[in-house]
Image (tube, rainbow, N blue to C red; front, side, top):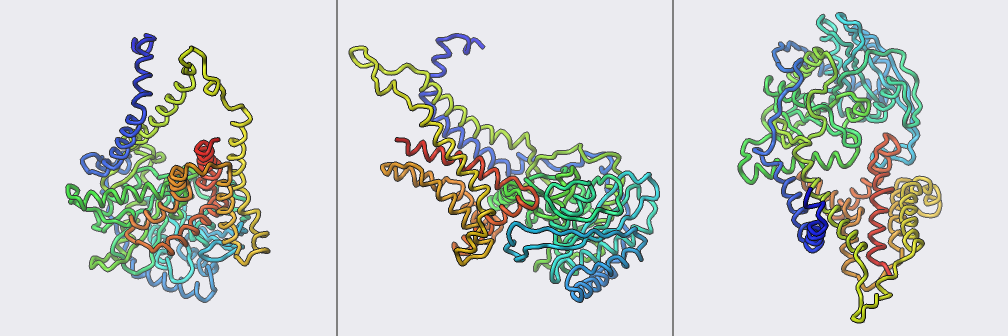
Length: 558
């Protein structure tokens, strides 16, 4: 405290910080990056452990025997789906009723702001089918959910068959203390969003859906199942949800514990765990896994149907079956036993999962980095902003220089007026507001005057508005600085991130394919915001882009 209270010492400290401002900022930046990259080194990470006492042991006996029967049910489901050209609602209702469930349906429809690029659909209509297994040993105030999306083609038929097989098996057990809801949702995330809004009596996206006729208790946890082959080589755990939300770490720990017990290969980010952490390749593998998780969270999109549960404070994850060329194979019976074990442990919960972490990064399923470990890296980067602000404050507060005869230089005293400062500030934020609102509203006009589709019109309008912001007053004498600032702009950063993400997934693409993927990412980001409330696009349009435009104005200040 004496250092700050003494005027002379305070003046010396401020002088030191301003004199060495640039070197200190460089050191902080390098230290922050090195800290974050070092977190993937296994001795610096924490080993996963179960924090919830009710799930602290896997000592349950899994007896699910009907894997082949479940696959046969899946083939029957696929035949009816092909015959009806979509969700076989009547067949699902009859099948669930024959397994002793209370069966209900929900119709929904959603008009997209513009057709999505993958399926080229404008109006989405569908039906969700769900059956409730009532708890025989409890007052039915809590529930668990097992879902399987009904997707087009031959995808995920095995998951629906296994869901129905588990429903029949669970119906014959007497130890359930929570309702179990078996849900088959149509149109993936859109159907899941409609069901969750109907279950919780909310409508945050403007979707039309029929009210649910049957409800269970308060949902404690949920799993979404994706299987598209009769056998799998590994099970991949998907955790990233809407706006980067993650489920409680104990849910991932539970999955990993049962995979270890039953002997199932398990992955996260599609990457197997390696034991050679002390080698360069092992460290690189851990860095790739951790960076993939961080980039998926930064995208803001839900990476599975489970991602929409998290906004309702429901711990959820997606289990995805991967069938590669490895010789090791896992059949449907083993996958069913793994799910049985997980639901039996979730059935023991006396309260919601809250003991473990909600903010973490995983370098593998057995090691994680908590928020207390990775936040110092961002803190070091944040110190740079404080140091630069201190340097500017000292420069503004310092007295103006005097000439040799003691007269103050008039050019140094003069400062820009309020209007000259306020004008670029207002223009920058208005440009950001235009980037946020115009792409969707001007798509019809763009389609009428140019030979493009609605999706292309939205993306091209966004690029046009973004580029128009660069037409603010400029100075051609700073070409190199302008080039560096353009490279560091939000658009170029997103383009680099697309190629970097593909490299992390070990799926490199050519420049042309990467550019098309880049345009698809822009349209998907706008669509995710309109459909599910993703915050990445408004954050970039209304905050990041206007701030970058202000830097552009400062660089070209006359």
